[in-house]
Image (cartoon, rainbow, N blue to C red; front, side, top):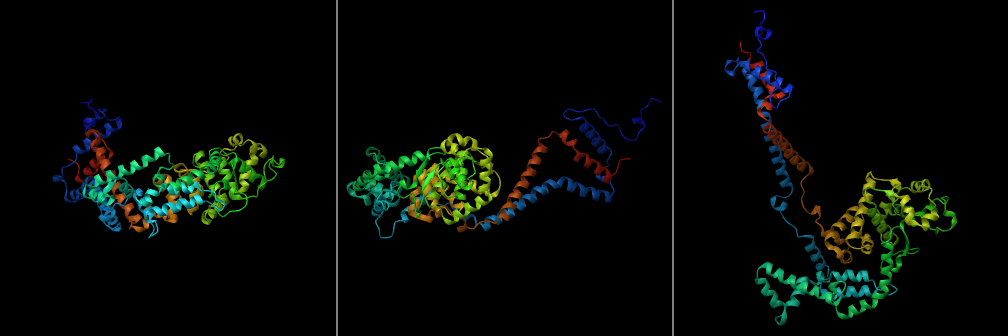
Length: 522
């Protein structure tokens, strides 16, 4: 009997520690220990009353924690979800659908016609005023085209289609017959009639095609003004399609410059940058040669030129910064900035782009001003990204404004973007114009002329509808997230094999606590 092992003589049963399929060595040891612990634990019927009571409390916590967590999460989500519905005005208010933006644009334009004035006459008068032009009697064809494209919206597309399709019976009879038909039949018939009218403009080579509704005398005046306008338009397109070079006289375009005297020449970004650099720091190499024209120093013009030339690295693509800064610079030189936006630009210059820092970056490059002015394309490559401004609240706000102006420019045209800057007083209004331009397209300038500041009312105003508090919304989402975590953990446990679950640390803890309170078998 001397060979009898210590395990046989011990009161503790032997624990099988060989690795099992799908378990690590440590999990196999833990599973064997857990099974041995449960094997020597008394049943609830054999336990003492105090121990049984404590064990029942433990099991209620161990087995009921996850279901209680789930039910509490759902209750919190339901309670605060109901608060969100109540604070938002009820289910009816939350499910109410507003007219789409296109419908609101057409309705707003139709309502802009003064009471008692025939819409067709009002439209023709506005186009005639554009052809009358400025004080020098130069026709403003940008404004003319802007009014031309909204003619059908002012008059009414359905009315124009009814008059085209009516025949001898007249539009009233046709309208009565279509009203009695299903709604989609009327909508399709009027849409096809309107498209047929617009399509006929292609044969007449009308630009824009909405001029098919205009009187012939007005079209003759447009043709007479086209030659002189094309000269200014060609020069403007040549300048704004270039990259950081050239110069352009803004007064060449009728109606573009408002309320501003003095020098209205616009230079490319690199040239403007070094003109201002020589004005701010005459000691920069190349300023003394006389090749760079003299110009009064303006810190905002200096900063915008730095952005346009690519000297400043914002958290935007270089092309977006250039397009937005060019529009902003042109609008400012044309006298189209509102005082609020001008003040905002000056604040950004003081905090983000002080003149001393721009001049310091240029001096560090050792780039001669006369070389940069005469060869701006080559100089722009050395200037790129020398001043980093990719973080901070002011940099984010400036990036947002430049990005919005670039998107407006690309959705319409550079001339439209310059003109509509005069209606922007803060960053939110620039964002609103971007959203409107995505739907309005080439009608954006016309909306600016016809509605003024009323253009911003086309978008839903959040103040006009009750809104749930941020606290209720956040807590409702927190309850849903908490419930989702419980469901995920439950699914993860169900997807685990039974042996792995039995080998977990929680299962081992449960076995030891049960043995502690229920007692060990004798």
